[in-house]
Amino acid sequence: MISPLPVAPVIDPPAPRAIRLPDGQPALLRLIRSEDEAILGTYFERLGAQTRRLYAPHPFDRPTAAALCGAIDHAEAMRFLLTRPTGQGEEVVAYFIVKRGTYEGDRQRYAARGIALEEATTCSLAPSVADEWQSRGVGSVVLDAVLAAVRGLGFRRMILQGGVRAENPRGIRFYEKNGFVRVGDFRVRDLDNHDMILTAR
Image (cartoon, rainbow, N blue to C red; front, side, top):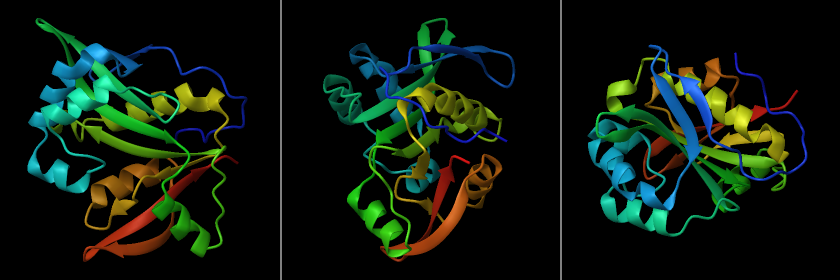
């Protein structure tokens, strides 16, 4: 199981980190760059309908990729790319957003359950993995690396941005395996969701 996030002082955004995919291929976990518009746009366009339906922090298209790469703000949200080398350069294998703090809707739901989320010590996670790399252990490798990368940022808690769909048992098992705990349920647009949180012990 992945270690929970410990308390640590705030530091600069994490540096790129070389990691190995579960099949042994080399990969690089790094923050998004202005020149990533093309590879991020390709990643978005290749995501299947099911992935798009279960994971939707923003539209998945080239205009969105261009907007994200043109307005990078690591102080607001760190957008991690896991890339691997190809004959033509590199491709995105996974895209994980770590927002500093929480969104108002998430914060209100947790507060209604008696769970106060301090903005300075809580971050929000929105992960995705390319369809062809799903169910191959990539998500756990990336999450482990992302948690290691943000350990020095002072976060004590990580929540799932917008929760996780109740109709996504594979995702729920993934989060539970990696230390997230279900703390409540909610319904949005006739869809049932679970709030889950990872807390430092």
